[in-house]
Every structure is written in structure tokens, then in C-alpha cells.
Length: 270
Image (cartoon, rainbow, N blue to C red; front, side, top):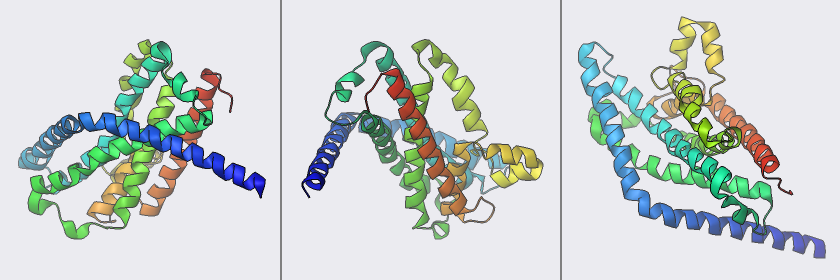
């Protein structure tokens, strides 16, 4: 009994410490909130106006605006957390303020987990503001009747968790500030362009079965397909359960490898 009570007390301290760290991040984020909302709104408005209003006049499908709208909302968290990668790499190489957090009375693996969770939470806050704005921009083109109210929270949370731990993994892979110049060209742009933002998985598979299977290695594909299945109806997209399971798997694998790499790099004692 005494051993169990000691363990419970230790876990409570761990939980309290992580919560306080996230609260600190939220206080800092509060000062940036409206600026980030404005940036996100400008990006969404431009995207919807071009793909939802302008390009249909050139023969693009009339419902392509809602297709892109959902993709833009789903992918916003991806670009939001990617911005954290550069800050983390700079800190690891130059400032090393992370060493202070590692000195707190919690395991090193939990410190790295905290980063992934915090980044996921902050990106999701901004992403939430895009849903009502998207509806206002497209009006009748965006049919609320197709939305699955139980699917959206699931895919939204899993997508942002994957984004957070994917950013953590990138921070562990790119070790120098000079390598940041390769990040967009070698990682971000290929993932984005082949991640289903402009097309559905069925369209790729119909064109080439091999290409379709290869895109299943891209975690962004499951974000896009899962969100569109939840907001535009399941027809024409990957099975929702498949997207959910894939995102859970990607999050666990990326998180585990990121923690392993960072622990080795900082010579942490677990």
C-alpha cells in the first residue's frame, strides 16, 4: 500500500508539472492569439476565394471550393507546428533552455511528450476558429447536413496530435540551424503536395495503383481523407476507421522515435 501511494504521489507531481508548463505556454500564446487568428483568416480567405470562386469559372468543379476548404482547415495545424521546429532546433543548438525544463522533477521522456502535446493544443486552438469562417465564405456550397458531429472531434484531435509529434520528430532529425534550409524543400513541400490537399486518394489510385499505395505512407493523406470524410460525407474517401488507426500509429511511432533521438542527443537519464 505504501509503495502504491508513493507511486500515485509521484504521478500526481508529474501531471501537475506538465499542466503548469502547458499553462505557461497558453499564457504566452494568449499574447499572440489575435495575430495568429488574423494570419489564419487571411490565408483561408485567399484560398477559398481562388479555389471556391475564381477557378470554378475556368471549368473546375463547383464543389471544389468546399473540398479545398476542408483541406485548408485540416492542414493549418501542420504549418502552425512546423514553425515550432525551427525554434526548437535553434534552442537545441544555441540557447538550450530545454535543459532547464529537463532539470524539473519529471522524466525526460515526459518533457519531450509535453512539447508534442503543447504544440498540438496550441495549433488546434487556431484551427477551431477556421470552421465558422469557412462556412461564412462558402455559404450554401458548404453543406452542414453532411457533417458528422462524432467524427469531427476524433479526427481533429488525432490530426493535431500527429502534427505535434511530427514536429517533435523533425526537431530530433534536423540537428543544425543550417539544415533548416532543407526542411521545406525535402520534407514539408513533398508531404503537402502529395498529401491529398488538392486531390482525394481515390483520384490518385484511379490514375495509378502504385502511386495510390505510395501516398498511404504520407500521414497528411489520412488527415485530409479523415477530415473530408467527417465533413463532406464518406463517399469517395478512405474509410474513416482506417484514417483514425493510421494517425494513431503515426503519432505513436513518431513520438517514440523523437523521444529516443532527443534523449540520446541530450544525454538524458530516463
